[in-house]
Amino acid sequence: MSRMADARAPSEPKRVFVGVTLSEHVTEECVKMQAELADVPARFISPEDLHLTLVPPWVMTDRVRVRQQLLEALYGVRPFTLRFNRLTYGPTAMRPWLVWMEAAASQEIVSLKKRLMDTFSARNHVGFLPHVTLARFQKEEPIAHLRPVARALALSMRVESVSLFESPNGGGAGYALLDVVRFGSDEPPH
Image (cartoon, rainbow, N blue to C red; front, top):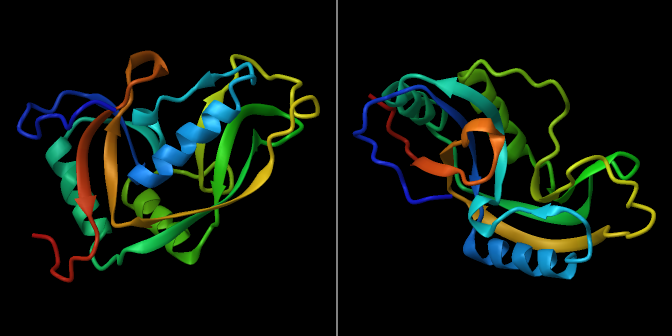
């Protein structure tokens, strides 16, 4: 992710999504796991791009409005702990195209996702399994039985905000951080 983009810039259409930026400690642990998986034939996600997606990409045309919507959605949300409990292939070991780190679907993260999905009128096409993608295969690889990666994890981080990211055109790598909105306000947004 590049440095925070200028919030005063005119709002041109951008492909954006909402997610959780990882803590420095969790990012460092992800980099260590990626190094341990160097023999897996996949494209590893750069440390700057590691995140947990809460609202999938959409085209944003009004950045000020999106910030206001985030403030309203996060009104009264309290910081919580996110616990990563498993490294595995995803979405399934039988059809892997990712290596990811799964997090417990706590009431807090599920509620946060629901609030945000409702706010942005996003639809859930599949169930929510909180995860951070560490690597992507170029195509579906029959590797799960040849190179097992599944293992238990005991990583956690405090979630105190959500981030608005811009996706690069064509879906590649290199997300731009557009905004960070912190939790915990007891004051209704104006």
